[in-house]
Length: 238
View (tube, rainbow, N blue to C red):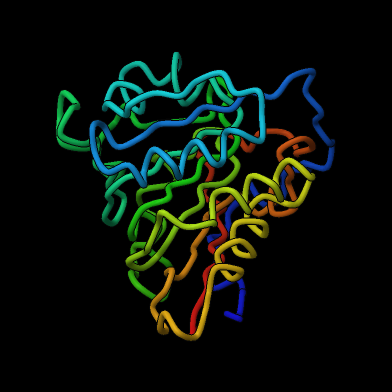
């Protein structure tokens, strides 16, 4: 079992804002976005999460869904799930997409949560580097980055393996009301086996506003303010 601990927190005045009022929406929306015309495993990863819900979107990924038209796609959902190839802050879109990928650290249109999105999962390699990996781990997310009301972004800090049971396990845990990032870490840990080696299936990482750490998909705190400087990183390590 990997240890799970809070590695870093950016502190600012946003930390003093009270965000204790629970939010229970009348309906929760889920969307899935698959590396475009890529490997079947990416299709399976996304569907095995979505099947636990009456989901609203299930699309081949393209850049506009995350950037210029995000208000009609990822930011129109409460929970978004992406699977494909990745790198630090980078989402591959696939051979069938209009562009090769989206760099979350540099694309000014990749700003989420100002409409609806609370949670996003990247089931791909190294999209969420931890404080142990980079001194600038938070720069893509706050204050003028992706987190503009977003609660949590969840994925891996390392290379990862997919086409396994993680997304199904995670979807089951989320639909049962488990806390979001903790459910992801548990699903990743459940997939570990000694015979596949130390690197399998990867080490999870999650970034979030501190007030949202106990959020579930169905019960979450008020949206953090846009432009805040308060960010917590939880990550797995050996």
